[in-house]
Picture 1 (cartoon, one colour):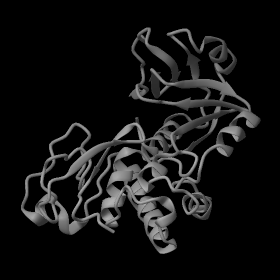
Picture 2 (cartoon, helix red, strand yellow):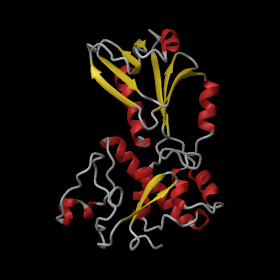
Picture 3 (cartoon, one colour):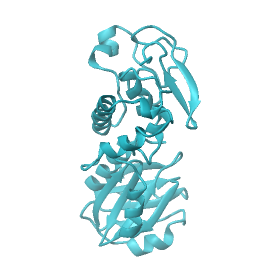
Length: 269
């Protein structure tokens, strides 16, 4: 499932190609046809992301709410658009570009009130202009649940997925099984600031890189990572491989319905 930086990048990409233009809106697959008819020819006025949720604004109070889920894909291209396949849930097209949405968990036309309800059930997002990290910590400090599970809970903090949770805990030497209530205010401030930094870089580069400059392949004289997810990481999807810092074997286990990765030597604290 895409993490929050990908959704914020998509919001920017939709705006760059379609904001201020009256796009053709169609649903070749048919599942969004009724809403597409209502939006066809309407101007895209704004785009927004909160965690893993994308919002495309048309006219006053009309929003397309998109959640990609596990299988959703978005593909941009230059005009003229080729004939769409019958897997395309939503296509926007103008004189210069087109974009196809396939396989999302959610693609729905909603109102301002519906959109507010989505925001209200999500935790603060490090990439939004007005996040409230104290609101997330207020939930964390009262919880016996592990910090690794809490970081994946979108009601606590929005946009963090499996990669960012594993990597930020490694970067701060925190045992992923520590209860949230044992995370100090200083530790939380450092985690939040680091997530904001890493995720902003994720938006800029359109990939996840989490290793510090002194730990890059060039700096350490090690081979670069070879993985279809791309980017340099410390522990994510590196189970049984040696830790870049101490050489201990990286471990993995199931937690919060996803595979957790950590270094048992570097993450004792």
